[in-house]
Image (cartoon, rainbow, N blue to C red):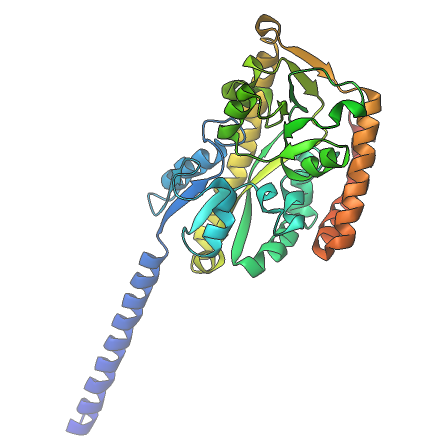
Length: 354
């Protein structure tokens, strides 16, 4: 080997070594960037079964499954941003991620409410089937993409109660002028029937009910409503939960942040949310019977809504859905997707279930 060859070989080895070092440094930097350390604002109190606790399950499982490489720190409602402002804060990168209820976004995106709860809609299994296998997830991603948000289903509960009332309601006329806290599309239905509807976060409902600022309220399941103290003031609890046969909440991640993760980290987060969704549902459902058993000792009377009221609510719901579909193309697309999927799902339920 002559001097020139040795020089070229030496140069080539130096270039190769430099390239390997650069590649290793880049890989190390990417690995470091892929470490998840997120502040996550929760929309609900994380002690609330099925509604709030799933995001705590995600917090715990992510840390353990990733060996500490994926960690989120969950903040209780209002600690960083208001419950109604979570998606906006994620959009603007004020926080990288949040645990949100899309019903609170219906003012700026009418279709968002359909991913949170649908009056006279599907049960939790039906919504889950539509989300994972019927195109629901893709529609949510389409809706939130312009807002730089990636949504992941992260909680679902069974049917709520139809509300807690100071006085009995038996006919549609009893809703006229009734001051009630009601969220989501169900609130628009009650407005159509003459109720005076207000939307306030869960933690603020009891003081409003106690002081008489509202006559009635809905919020969640009996296990959660008892924690909020509704049974101390309003002694008439109505069923079924026509307005929210399911209640879904989502982990929302800033799209730029999400796209910066490796596929393995994305999969880990999605898997953690899926597991938490169904663990939370099981936990919530396990508690409700015991809470109903305490009604008598507390002087609470459970009622079924009258057929007359149910018919009025169903008719008003149909009107609200038609009006919203006519006014907003995305609402129409999502709602039609749900209804088309439901046609087959309901047929299966009627034939296959007791």
